[in-house]
Amino acid sequence: MHIISNIALITINETLFVQLISFLIFLFIINRIMFRPLQNTMSERESYIGQTNRDILDATKDLQSLTNNLRAKEMETRVQAFELQGEIEELGKNEAATIFASVQEEIKDGRQKAEKEVETLLSDARKNIKKESESLVVNIMECLLDRRLVQ
Image (spheres, one colour):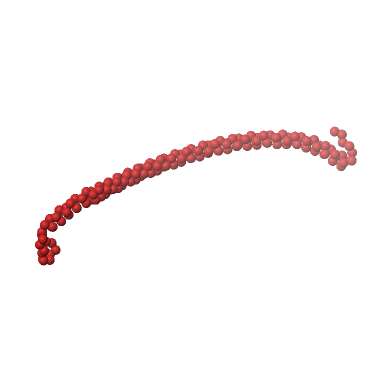
């Protein structure tokens, strides 16, 4: 072997070619063992993340459409509830008017019965008062005249 006294960073000799071939073999092995599986894993992860993002967007769209449908159904149900409430209120008003009318009829009937009873009581009282007043007048006259009156 020959010793070179030249101090240089790279010298061109037979070891350079061996080192170059060793480096290329090293790159080939590293590429096979490390970089390709790593690139495959990274591409799988990117596709998984992309699929997950698409699934999230689809789920968000589904959620939005379900929310819109739910709101539409809620509004429809509210409208139906207000209509039913109006119908029930109308039925209640009609029933209240019917009850009020029947109560007024009962009051009229009761008033008429009471007036008839009062009239009969008044006529009976008038008859009794007339009889009693006649006997009272006769008693007063007898007392004033000091004698007995014959009728």
